[in-house]
Length: 279
Image (cartoon, rainbow, N blue to C red; front, side, top):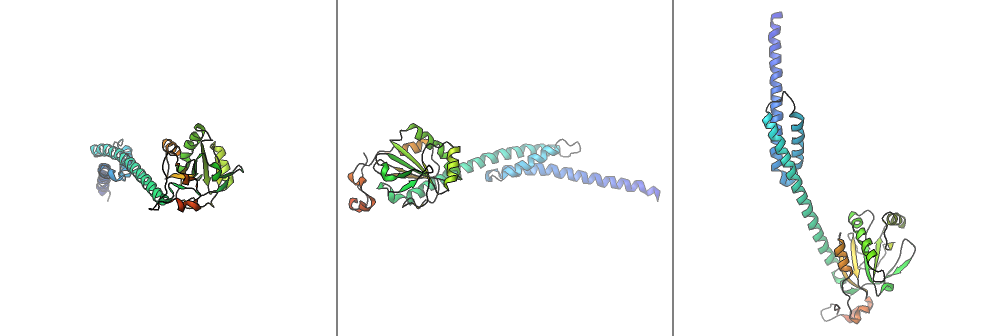
């Protein structure tokens, strides 16, 4: 019975060695395979995940003295790194392209949604600011007006606010008035205005006449000239140059720009369009 023990021990050691060999080889092949997959799928961004897994696995195994197939692991390490970098590149490209496309679609939707209001007198309304002051749109005749529909929880809205603050500080308030309008409670707006040093009036209001009662996305910005005519409507985030450019568009100067919306029909031409001309 005892003479058989060395033979069993040798078989057990051989079995363990074989399992270690298979395991080590499998890890090496896995690293190499993950590297190849990460490069192949990098254009679909998911290669980022395979590249990260392959890179971490290779780093963890490369220092093992019992590792077999070290060249495969090294290849897997570099391939995973390349796949990860390519995934980052294609991911960034995809995100930027998606953002630009969404922005273009948003502008087109805004153009269609408010197209019938462009070059037409804005209906009058009155809002009470969070400071307790009342502002009537009709009382701002002679001044250009920007109406910014926004919310404190909206990232692109918050990104635009510094642009409005800068424009407000650089242009005389007798020439341009900026009003921020949100449907959120006044207390929330007061805290946000104080924290962000907003230097223009902000109002909490949700009961407004058309077209201001149909805001489907924010930020939405209306640009009104000194005669009370809606000149431009922009949806989505806009940079400072675009906001400034639209804020200072030339006025419409025909006498009918001073008419109220109720008398607008009398100022329409045979095609049903307002008889407006730029100065």
